[in-house]
Structure formats: C-alpha cells, structure tokens
Length: 117
Image (cartoon, rainbow, N blue to C red):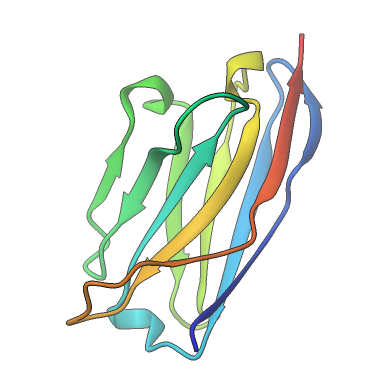
C-alpha cells in the first residue's frame, strides 16, 4: 500500500515562507506523478502544484511565482517551497501520488498551514 507522509506545515506570518515535504513509500517514486493540493474550511480541495516524472511542473494561478514544487528521487520525496505567503494560503495541504500506469491517486494525511495577517 502506497504511503505518503507530509511534514513542514505550521503557523507563519504573511510574507513568510514554509517548505512542505512529502515522503513516499511502497511506490516506484521516480516513475510517479506527484502533486500538492489544499483544502480550506468550507471550500473544495484544489490543485496547488504538480510535477511529472519528467519534472514538468504545473501551478495554480493563485500561487504562480510564489510556490515551487520539486522532487528528489533519491529520497522518494516531493517538496513544496512556499514564499510570500498570504492569509488566503491558509489550508490543509495534501500530497498526492499517481503511480505509473495507474488511475488511482494516493493521498497523505495532510499538514496544516496557517498564515496570519
């Protein structure tokens, strides 16, 4: 069973930075598409950033130029560097993995990010 463990969330002031990490296990990580999503209270979960096994990246318009997704295949870990954080970035952030040749998305337990104004 694929397991994803997020870390790095917390409380930060507006304008600050955080780096989220997501370590994967029971998966051929280098061949998986990885992504970060977030869900704020009362809102639907939304895609924040994604990275393919070829390291092509996609970002939500709301985070372009502020967030950066990257992956370290040697550590089976995907990162989300978040800079210039805004109160509207407050949400639970989830890591997701889609193994190669699979239609199933696996999810981590989420990590809370709170940005104070």
